Image 1: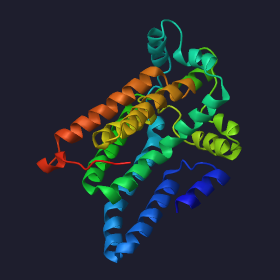
Image 2 (image 1 turned 90 degrees about the vertical axis):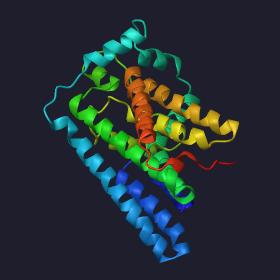
Image 3 (image 1 turned 180 degrees about the vertical axis):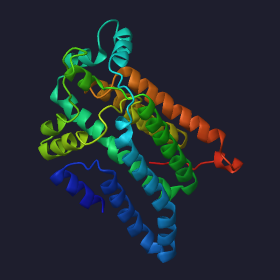
Image 4 (image 1 turned 135 degrees about the horizontal axis):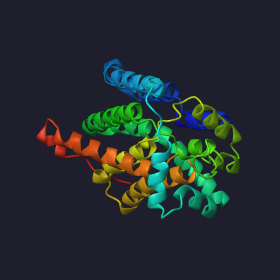
Length: 285
């Protein structure tokens, strides 16, 4: 199953559509559950289908959030980043400094990981730790809902769109360029096509950052190896760096995304129903 997914990514590009990703997720889990009989498959579907339905509903409403008549904020996020950068937009500085092909390739992989890390982690936790899976599901849904509410109330233009409208200095949108460096132009084309079909002003907060930070916060308590902890923190830091460099988000968007993730984790932990939830197994290797 994993080999088939990787082959598909190499041939047609990394899928970003939620239906496709959830389809692969459920097929893999059903294949795993089938070993234990039909009762486990029924339990799998009973637990996963409501989650899948809620995530698909989020995607549908997220696409409508920019059509509710709220004014789009273009200048305010840019002004905050100008202040943070001491008069220079961090995106412009990063694009001038980070031009190497190795960086573009790594940035493409980091950016693309957003679409697969959450469903992959949901799969692993469902198999290995159902209690932690349940908490993680609540965090994913709460974070998605919080992001959606903000997109409705505060639609905001990302840097590439603000530059296109002449509000800030010219910048490039670079999130897909690394796929050419990797020799996978189809992947870059698929990403660019999918980017054109989503809400263009769903920039505050950065949910790419939020979910990277959420992954880090959820797994850090169960990571026993030093390299695991370093990798988790590195991923949470690298994602916003890539987003700002690529022109997808301002620094302030990523800071808010991290704050949303931390708030969701705190709230879910405060409202845990069972005291024995505190104990979670550790992850070796």
